[in-house]
Each structure stands twice: as structure tokens, then as C-alpha cells.
Amino acid sequence: MEKAFNKILLAYDNSEAAVAALQSAYGVATKFNSQITALVVHGKDDNLEDSRAALESFNKEKRLNMEIIERSGAVYDEVIKLEKEMEFGLILLGSHGTKGWQKLWMGSNAFKVITSSTCPVISVTAKASSSELKNILLPIGDSRNTRQKVPYCIKMAKAFGATVHIIGVSKSKSADTEKHITSYINQTQQFLASKGVKSTSKISFGVKVAETCIEYAEEVNAGLMMIMSETESSGLFMDSYSQQLVNNSTVPIMSIHARDTRLTGATGY
Image (cartoon, rainbow, N blue to C red; front, side, top):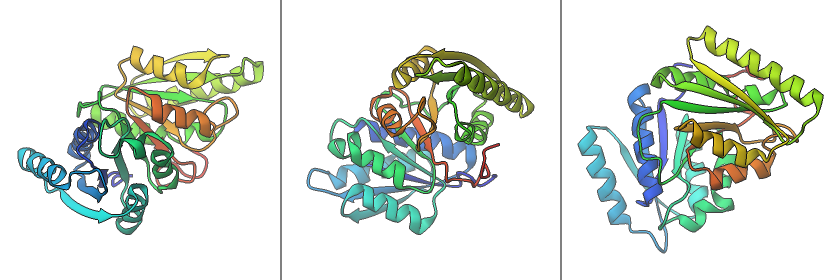
């Protein structure tokens, strides 16, 4: 657990969103003493010299030891290849760029990086340029996997001194759904408290899941929303929900796989 984020892979194209992702990567690296590797992929519309110059300037300004790697090919392919080659613990990428890889990141290809990686992925919007993290949004749904992201949440919250805002959310209004989610929220709050992490909670049933999460993230000024990338249940984060969040969220999204048991074990905490 201590080395969860010791190696960070940053996909960089010098867009506004990529610059924001760089700031976020720096924030995480500072807290976890991580090594950052920045990947620049050659493409028809990229400006390789600008990207390298921006990275080198940031590296010098912050006195980092950031490695810059250049590759040619499809962006998501090169990100995944490098992640597997060097066994990174975290990937960061811009999700709403205004140039460069915009068409690649904003559509299905951004989601391919998230669903194909073996480690968590943080997708960062252009507005989210802060390296600080004071509030984390933790959606909880009606499945066992929904709690599997909690240890990652604790890791982040403790490092940044952040408050965790739990939202129990589902499109269903059934009594069973409410019972399960309320139980999961109580268990999660108790676990967070046992680790010295502050939290709040609320529930929203019979709602549009993605929109509700995004609205609440903005309400609590969240610097990060943590979700499971695979289907959590019919009420929360089927592929369509998680993809909506990645493409539309105004705050960074940390996507975690149910198959990722390096921190959580097979069944969560």
C-alpha cells in the first residue's frame, strides 16, 4: 500500500486539460514522493516541440526528476503499452482538451485507456488545475464492488488532509436498494473514521446518476470523484454511467477497476 502511487504516467499533449493533469500529477507526486514519466505521442496535429518545452520548463521550475518519453502511434495504445512495460501505479490524462488530442480523449478512446489499464486512471478537466485536494466525492451504489475504491480514497484523503463526501445514489427507488446502500454508507463512514478520515454523507434515489454525482461534486467543491470503471450495478455506473462521468464531469475522475486488488483485496475493504 505504501507504494501505490510511486510511479505516475502522465499522458501529455500541451492542451489546457493536459496542463491541468500535469498540475494534478505534481500534487500527487509531492504527497507520495512519486516518479513522474510524461508520455508525448507523435500525431498529425501535435506540436512536439511545444509539449517538450512546456514539460522541461515545469520540471525545472518544480525541481522534479521527470522523465519524458516520446512515442509514435495511436495515443491510447502507446499509453497502455508503456503502462504495462513500466508497471505504473497511476495514470493521469486530460479529458477536455481544446486542441491536440481533443478528438481522441473526449470520445471512446479516452475510455479505452481507462478500461484497458491495469492501474487507476485520473482524467482531469481543463478547469481543475490545482495541485491541492481538499474534498473528495465518493459515490456509493448497490453492489459489493462499489466499496472496493474506499482504500484508494483513504490513501488520497489522508495524504491531502481531505474530507470525503459520500453520496449514496441510484436510479432505483426500491426498498432493497435503499437498505443496501444505506448499510454500505454506514460501513464506509465507520471505516473512514477508524482511519482518521473526516466524512459527510447523503442519499439520492430515483435520480439520474451521472448528473446527480456531477452536481454534488460541484456543490461540495470536490477536487476528485472516485468511481469504479466496470459495472457496479444496474443502479450505478454501468459502462454508460462511468463513460458519461468521464466525458462530462467538471471535476477530475479517478477510475478504479474491480480487478485491481493491489490495495483492496478481492472483495473491497
